[in-house]
Image 1 (spheres, rainbow, N blue to C red):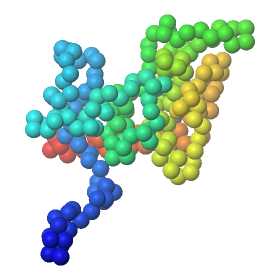
Image 2 (cartoon, rainbow, N blue to C red; image 1 turned 90 degrees about the vertical axis):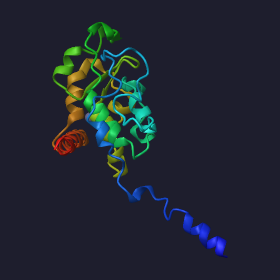
Image 3 (cartoon, rainbow, N blue to C red; image 1 turned 180 degrees about the vertical axis):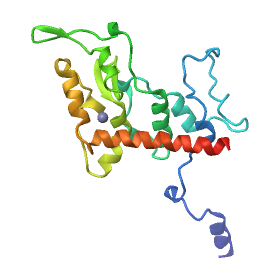
Length: 211
Ligand SMILES: [Zn+2]
């Protein structure tokens, strides 16, 4: 009996991941994304170098952030990730910005009716959330990708075209992009607001760290 109580008392009282705040990891969040290909560093694996305290090995989150798929056609749904990691993943994508290839030659022509059509790079100028996947030759919405799962939890599911399937109706591109944005209070506009709030929150944290 005594052994039982001793053993029991040694065990941590809870295994409740929801009882504490998710790890904000704000020290490393002030660093640039670690997968920046423009870095002048040699192409060695420097996962553990700049944005980690020297006594900490790369965490699971570090590994995920270093390997986030850039092409929207290759990304898993946000719900694939541990809920405790999603905030950092969203920040990483927002810091990186939408996937917007600049070369029109990257977009293949597709015969639609009697006319060859394709995604037009100039559409990026009017729709800051717009992304293009070379893998799927399809358009996606970064903001909805990042936050749609939160709306799903509330039972407010919208269209998956710009999140999972990818949009390909190039004949009416801008028209459909405007429809996707919708009116004030639309799911897309709510997602955009969530993105703005998240990045403002980050700036707030950085201000505190600087002080
Ligand atoms: Zn959207």
